[in-house]
Image 1: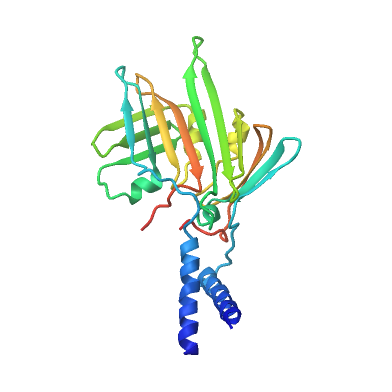
Image 2 (image 1 turned 60 degrees about the vertical axis):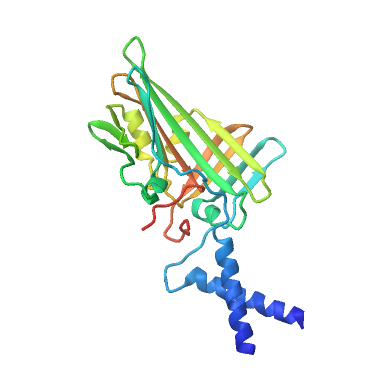
Length: 144
Length: 131
């Protein structure tokens, strides 16, 4: 009997979840509810998730971020000296963390257009960011 | 009775969903604009765009713009300290171009008021602007 009530509640929870997911709003919605960190034996790997889905995740350890710092100075010859620093980090629900850095402007440029709730993926070899993937869509869930 | 149980279960289900919907890691600071000015006139300003917008404060703001003339950044703290810098660096303009509505923005300037650094952070931990 207890089991059947539990099962009913689970069923209703699923229904409620569906209602919350779609509600009265009509556009297609989806999101990655978690951060995924993949680490290979050779030190390479990748991490991905959406900023909205990660913030809304059920797991308090989860986070995903990238920071870009650009510094401009002028040398004695009067030329601009440009320095770029990219740092990306991700922590999944099991507290597995991935961090990578890059000083390449072409890597930093890949973050242009990343919005509040976009999908972000970065791949790495050792501690070096190798690529960054940004995906924006009407379907991605917003931060709550 | 059956209906009552169903309603209670639905409420529980919704509560569970609502409860878990806000559990991802969050930035726990207040995100306010922080301005640091050095004796030589150089300095740093930093703030979280979403957090500042949502705060109950009234004076503080932080902003950057870019145009074909370069960039212009300014910030005012809640203590009414206003700072600004500009630069014609297209390189720094790339940094301004990567801003989103809830990013963390930091800019630095030299003694001449020229912007020297733009730092933009995107994170799942930062609040969206609300309302």
